[in-house]
Amino acid sequence: MLVERIETALNAQIKIEAESSQFYLAMASWAESEGMNGTAKFLYLHSDEEREHMLKLVKFVNERGGQAIIPALSQPTSNFDSLNQVFEKLLSHEEFVTQSINELVHICFEEKDYTTQNFMQWYVSEQIEEEALARTILDKLNMIGNDKGGLYLFDRDLEMFVPHEGDEG
Ligand code: FEO
Image (tube, protein in one colour):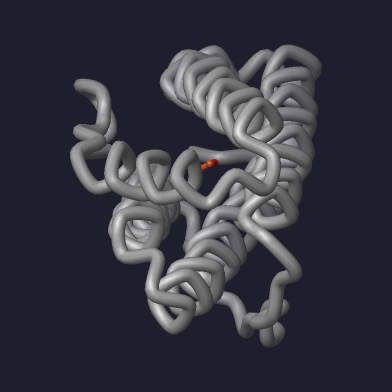
């Protein structure tokens, strides 16, 4: 069984993962409309992964005798100034997600819920990789600056990107 405090925290995390998925979907659509197909493909994939993160939580809550609540979502930003801005927003959003997951793990310790704490370790590891990936991409973009040839190659590289193992959720 889940204590109420844990169930509430898990449901809050479900909403955050669902929002992440919407957020990256909006970024993907923007990139596609701007003709950056590699970036769009990467972001569509990232959006799908976030949905998997959400589903994994939904199933866990229900399996543990709680009730996963599917949240209403607000409309995400759909216009961006540049690829840099997209990935800056993505990184700061991931940092926010990491904070939220750390807080959830902290609550698990306080409530002595080691089952949920153990389950959440997957998310802790995932966040390390997601933040590192976002930082690597942002570093590349900062190096490229406004160089059109560089941006073309960047977009092509992202088209080839294969998600790391374990991303299937
Ligand atoms: Fe599921 Fe990117 O956090």
